Image 1 (cartoon, rainbow, N blue to C red):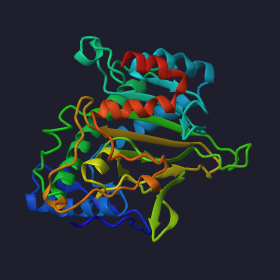
Image 2: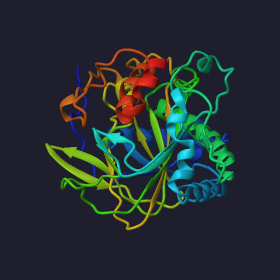
Image 3: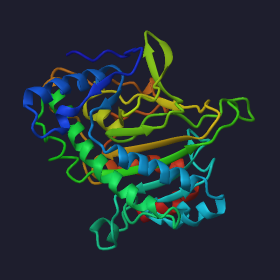
Length: 353
């Protein structure tokens, strides 16, 4: 049987116009043409820009303005909605250095949000981690509406993109929305990367966020014009870091560990990192569109994956861990990861799980 190649180098992140996926009047042939581009990007780089996505520009500006207003507040005011007050829902604010990647503090501050769920929701009643109400600040009061509107818009876009990814694998367009993503876990972050020296006190790079892969299926990132995102390209044993600069009107998308697992490594979750060299604050808004909490994650039986064996790459991965050896639900996988990001919250969140 044939295995996918062990490494795939690339020179730049491709740009894909996805309007056929979001336009209900498009033909299947038009959507299939976009799907082929998505499949090629997922195989080659695991990253791609999307344009023609239809997300309202005024909504994006409204969210960005409110986010910058929040981060400009004094730290003590921001800490009024600190994550410790979010409990098992894992929501709220953390200050610079409060989040770890590979055991090192990131140079960023941020807000954690997710699908707004009331106390009557079954998963909230069960005390399921990462489910519950959001913590919104009193000021700016506009942030709440902007975040909830944005979550709704990006959720629609996420389903459309996953329809294209399903087509790229030779599956029915609704394969994911009718399966592991029927009730997706939607998590949203707003990060502010302050300016500062490029090296930390120990002489290591002062990463805004260090090398990592995303955990779920699909990430949609809105980044401002400061730049700083880099994507890892590996070919013939040589590692290069490729810049993914901001493109006006686009989202940067990348696939996560669970799509890597479902496709046996054919679609690769690619390591990436951020270093803010702009000399000013960098605003970043990653939206994570992931499988349902209780969804069992197994390799897909897809036409495009026929005669494909698992491409095991644990030795190349940033954490030296195999996503293909994992057995269980997405919630199981996520809980194994998130406690390492905020060690001070780990005992409370995991004990409620």
